[in-house]
Image (cartoon, rainbow, N blue to C red):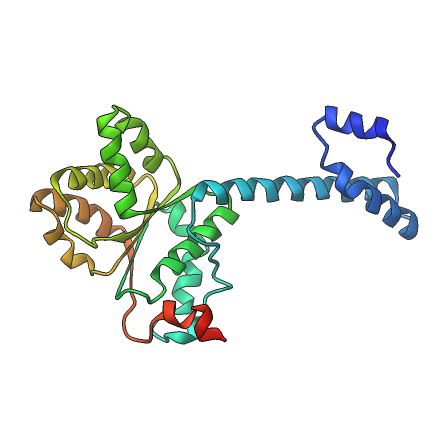
Length: 248
């Protein structure tokens, strides 16, 4: 049993996490007759793992994912057109180091949002900062920020993370302000950090969503030439397949 004086000292040194594992490690050391160095190595490793787990928890909270989606939880068998090898390769997160983008498009309900959140989850595991946001919500927040003069601060929120995930882009046409904001995000992040976008429309149809084709082409050229394109078509509805009722 750890005495209260030692617990107080550990907390002064900001090593309060030791308290959680010290007792069982002492028991293990006595049972296995561990050396002092082996025992110290164990408790230090416990603290490192605890701190890394806490950092991951913070990164996941800041990412604002809709759900806790992972690649382990994705059923690749439902649609053979989704190449597991391509997705697992992207999940290595080398695309982030290369400042590349990922565009995932296809009909509604086929698992696009799950896939980008799962890739985002992998990025968090590897220490990258991630932000997930619905396109409509992002544009709404940026518009509101213009009225209270906090636009630059709000824009930094979308420029700061290593990975920005914009979900459900292109559900409706963009107005001039939304087009301007989207162009700003793409141009500022281009060759600096990665963007993941999901859409029900293929990228070649995105130009028509913009009021100004010049702005559209300028933004989309930056996105497309440096992006991995993942088209998901055919197959049944992944959302329907994964619903609780369908799994009963």
